[in-house]
Length: 266
Ligand code: GLP
Image (cartoon, rainbow, N blue to C red; front, top):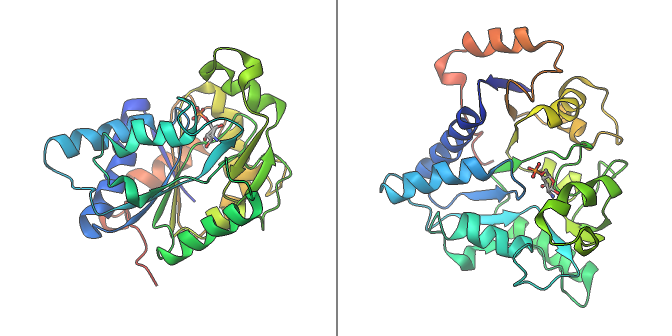
């Protein structure tokens, strides 16, 4: 894993945006794996700045969101379809027809999940998947004990996740109990993974992901098995990493050609 420790959330956002902008400039039709939550918002804002300045064109890129709530209407402001539209599609001027979110309102949930997997496959797979991490170590909505082989499916949210996400809803009781999420197996199929985290509240989850044993109790730890993962964190989120000084040394001494590379599509 490549661990990049940067001074503050602004630097994390600029680094993440550089990875994605580099990809889209080289592959204008690239498939981007989009995440919701607050962690990637700075990246999207940086990318939007490049788009408005005429330095980046995302109109031909495709996007697949990681997850969606079940049980709230698509036009609810906290549905991930709404969030992706407001935070990604509109500011990055992406083509809405090319940006996909799992259908949490489908009458046939297993069929909708299978269709989502097929759509990702038919698009050629995800080039770079952006990931945040839950305080309990979840990625997407793959809560602790999710199968490492899982594909897109319905999940029950952990009480801690519902409590963490209550800040987005008027009443904590309004937080949905279920969601659709890409599985850990789906996420692991992306060519490159870019995990971002800021703040001391994520320090434990980041340490478990990077340095802990690979265990379904810390779903992010499966990333240790992916050949092209970059974990970009600010100092606070890095504060529980035992080998932080080593990661800084590695990054500072890395040859330029080895930085920010997305493996070519096979
Ligand atoms: C949410 C999302 C995840 C996100 C995580 C952390 O519930 N499903 O994709 O990474 O929890 O959220 P935040 O970035 O707001 O801390």
